[in-house]
Image (cartoon, rainbow, N blue to C red; front, top):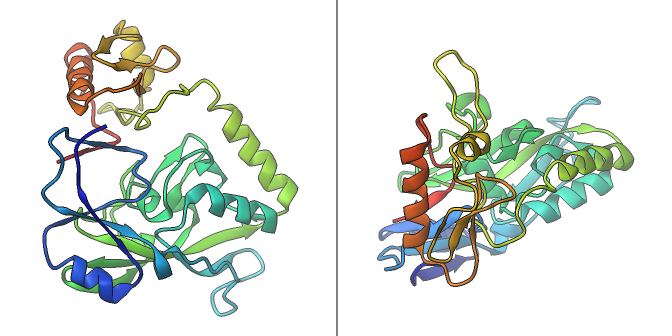
Length: 270
């Protein structure tokens, strides 16, 4: 859904710096995104080429018998395919992100995850590019938290080193299967994913966003061709031909009916 945009698919750092010379947005897999019906005035950057390369060889300078640190893995690498490679190698730490249809850079930028784990579980270091230049940081240098890396909006995760635990393909697959089974109740229609983060009360208790929306009686509510999914209330699905305005209307309805501050998990452009 949504309007048109000018896409720049980039192969390397020189092209990236050229693309960043004018107003831009950075697109990962686009799986947690709703673009406005009128489209975008900024160029949209996608990472390809060297940013889609994968080096999973253990770095002997950084690895130990209990922890493997890989070479650089590009931000444009699709997360599902990366998880399959890690499973075949028997490398553990990122199983909790199974089923998330993201690119690695986007998953890191929002610290994507499930109740079984999140992207920052498996990070050793990150290369980040901004208009000010390129820098390498560790997770300890970022103010990351639940569904938030703390990386500013105009900064691009171009590549990362993964921090993994040696395991076996069988054990890694078991963990992936357990996380995957827990997601079976999610809707099969097209959707930008979970609409809202699970809110945290002042006491520190975290509430389930889907449960709150369900208790407000909003499952199945529909505006145009967008609907709050009957299977899971924290998903808004596209029944076919839905507009971004339809989704915005449902988000506003949820916020007006749920008596807790609800913060979006996916992105609205612009």
